[in-house]
Amino acid sequence: MPSVAQSPELGEPLDPLPREFAALMRPEIPGLIKEIGVEIERAYPVYAHLFNGPHSDAIRQGVEQALAAFVDRVDHPGTQSALRDELLRQFGRVEAYEGRDLDTLQGAYRLGARIALRRAKSIGRTYNLSPTLILAFADALFAYVDELEALSREGYVTVQSRAVSDVSALRRKLLHLVVAGPPLPRATIAELCREASWQLPAECTLVALRPPATGVLQTRLDRDVLADLSLPHPHLLVPGALTADRRAMLDSALAGTPAVLGLTVPTAQAAHSLRWARRVLQLIDEGIVPDAASVACEDHLTTLWLLADPALTDQLARRELAPLDGLSGTRRERLVETLRVHVSTRAPAEQVGELLGVHAQTVRYRLRNLDNHFGDRLLDPDRRFALEAALRSLHLHGRRNPD
Figure 1: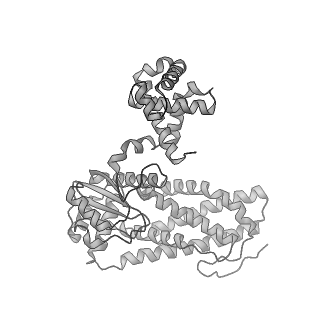
Figure 2 (figure 1 turned 135 degrees about the horizontal axis):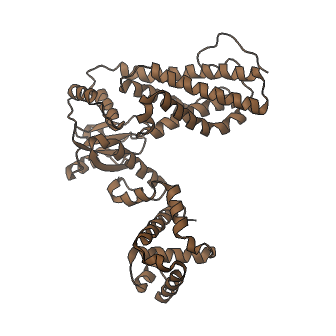
Figure 3 (figure 1 turned 90 degrees about the vertical axis):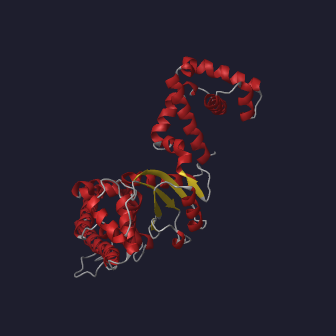
């Protein structure tokens, strides 16, 4: 078993841990991410809006990358992660944007390390690992935390070193504060608005861009548009609604960069507009929403609603389609598809047949079967609505999983 060395260098483990230890640690990462998030929110309530705001995915990705990179380094000493480094620098930039010193972030890192050490001790008891190994793990872990803190300090100093007259930096800070979610720090935003010569609008529209947004021509953006294209998830804030002139401006400035236009909302709800826009980007990647250079959230509100909680809509579908559970796979699928078209269109058998590509008589036969299985359910407005929602959700999932 490795011995404990003295005077470690910054970010360097004291002794290499056995590579087999990585295999024990890796399955613990998902649970650790959740536990660390809960404990940090409890110990540092100031981070609650970040964990639940539009940057929550990037924050969880940063925590995941930090943990995974440590395990990877145990498995393969010397392994580096550019993504982890950038996300940790972004953590530091966020602290600077929000006007905090680094003590809070450093405290959160060390709390996460203590939780990880607690989990390692539990693993040690389970697998009867030696105390020397757990001590070596603790030394390596806290040396690793020093490395994480150094990376975040780089991002923090980058923001702090910008000149006060750097209007673009001020506007990026404004953008971050607006989309961080309520409550808006009114006094801070009012002061930044004066320094950046920007007027806080009553409502705004967020635009999510597909990274990297290197093709965006910022010189073609209207002067009052806030933008941060350096983030892992770049986005814009357009004051007010997207008028025809605003749309033309965006088409010119984006220069083909794929974007999703969020909903126009009161500025205090900007985080929702950005969250919905980013969700549509995900649905495009999953093949559910058709891809295009520019996609509007307002054209996909029902899809966003039906897929907001996949586990719940799955339970709804199970309940509403339970009368068909006893049927074979192929027969059930045909009846489900016929029922979806019938319920959603309210069309006669001839039109349903055209939509399905089958004879009207086949449709009538299937509808009689469905009446036998569902009975009065198809006549009850509430059950019919629930059934249509379930069928539409299944159909959307089918676009992603055609098999």
